[in-house]
Image (cartoon, rainbow, N blue to C red):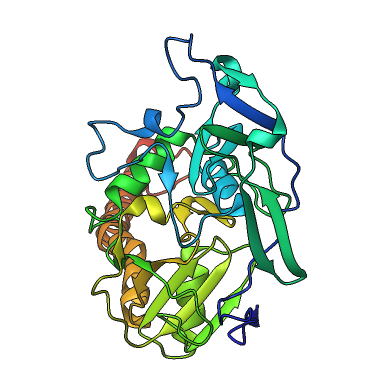
Length: 321
């Protein structure tokens, strides 16, 4: 893994972002004669069984919203479509999302989203007032979660703050600073397409750092201190699945899944626990087996000494008169 803390910035000092390189499906408006809204994917994620998670529909983020951000948000939950309305509102939909929508003139989708990327500024249509620019929820460099259902992922997100047995070192989802040189954990960083929680923690441990933070699916940041005041986010903001383990969460767009780096001795004790249990159970069993074997061989010897061997001259049954 290569260190990437020396980030590229735009003229305002913000960290440059990646170009999603996508094409819109079209401009659509809601069919007012329809009874229900079919582009309501985010609303369907809410459940009374997961009270700690809240999914507004539409999802709005004035600081980060652009085409790439919206599409990634929908990919995280395995939706088929992403749509932007009025430049700031993001919605997600399943395969039938457009059932209650009518394709409209592209002039209605007159809002543009401009993003500073590594290759320069890029501009994409972002809907209009009451009009939606629809995109397929696909980005070449941002793979969807594989081998996990949406329900499984939502349950992980709901429990990660509560289950201290399964997630003893998790410290929360923290908003990162989007300006260069001002990262919440900026001492050391790296990125990899095989990122997991363990890989990031081990990387930070090598530098003797206290905290490890995962962000944007593939990034890992290290530091010794951070201030959560005013930066604590809900788990739904750290919704990126780790590419190396889709059952783990690797932050979100400028959102850190922060873990305290445990001492190596704790890990060794944890790793040796099966061995300790095995010895405590296996050693007494071994002793019992050895004692049993000795008793058994003793009995065999006694039996052999009292046997009716026809060739044994000491056998009284073989004495001839």
